[in-house]
Length: 140
Ligand code: HEC
Image (cartoon, rainbow, N blue to C red):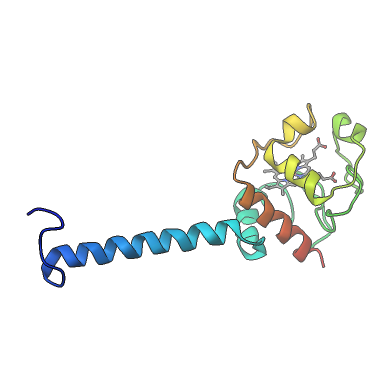
């Protein structure tokens, strides 16, 4: 069979074209949703996957392997009552703005060399934004 030669409306070729057109449309929707506003719902899912091994859910003000993340957006770095901050972290001196959290989650060791959070980082910017939106929403 030669593509484009078959008349429209008949058989397999039409079906294939339909599938192709819709696949492109779906890809466009997924792309757009990735590029759109922060998604705290997806952030919750990502938090479950990447963070709950060491941190309590941010609606609870409790420490575990890592410090409480309750109200962390807007908090001083190493500013909770967590007893086991590394000296590298204690020396850090900034507020956890969304921008700083984004840098941290991208590559914790690059931002605070020698810190104790054994986490490689998240390279997808949208995912980081979603987690930050979740941290904000879940702390209320
Ligand atoms: C392997 C355990 C581990 C994982 C996984 C982990 N963390 Fe941590 N986190 C820590 C530890 C330990 C610290 C304290 C680091 C230090 O003092 O050097 C920390 C510190 C932090 C801080 C700074 C808190 C403060 O009070 O200054 C933030 C914010 C944070 N983590 C967010 C996250 C998020 C969000 C995730 C998931 C994407 C995550 N962490 C995954 C263990 C972990």
